[in-house]
Image (cartoon, rainbow, N blue to C red; front, side):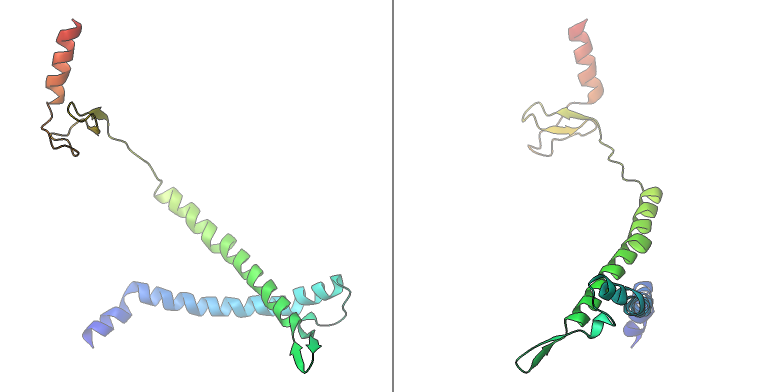
Length: 147
């Protein structure tokens, strides 16, 4: 029970539970908005008077409620749009501002044996494991050659 209690009280689980509850409440609000405003507007735009969500067609003895599908599709699109613009986009911008992605490349030099790039401060090549000369010794030798 002690392990279960620590699992339940861990921040991630509590945050997830709160997110699910808020998501369910937000879904109810979106579904209410779609049912009260958008579905009737779709009905007006298509020339169908009344509540579009109750529209259906019948084949044989089977009824196909396409209006409920249209209502669910509008709810999904509205919910996805709202979540993207109200949650995902601001969180991504905040993440970029607080932790900008910076690729800091260490200066590289070529290994004298296998010619693979290795960091300047490396003492051995990661590819062929040959000991590498010191940078200062190598720079001094190049200065002597040039002079």
